[in-house]
Amino acid sequence: MRPDLLRVLLCPACREPFRLAVEERDGGEAARGRLGCGRCETAYPGNGSGPRVLPPVLVEEQERTARSLRWQWTRFSPLHDPALYTT
Image (tube, rainbow, N blue to C red; front, top):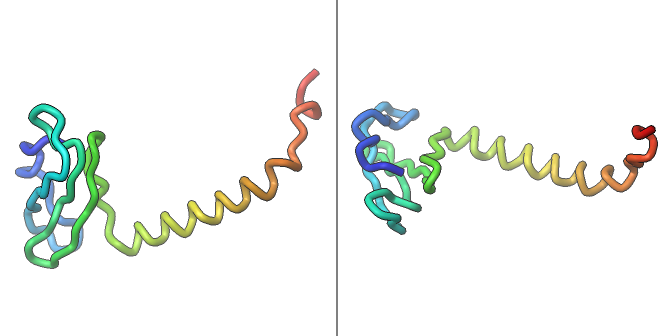
């Protein structure tokens, strides 16, 4: 996460600028940290690939969807027989 991106990133909930709390550095970039909003006090995780700026309700929905898909994958993948689709 590059610190210079802070001047263009805004909190999606209230449109205020973020503060960066660096937890781990890699050169001049934050390898891991959190973007925090001083106004609504919402925090967003970030890693080397960039911040994950989603409103909390969407993060919860994404996690619920991932759990559901994980259950389906572990339940139904043994039923799949690749020999049915190869010649």
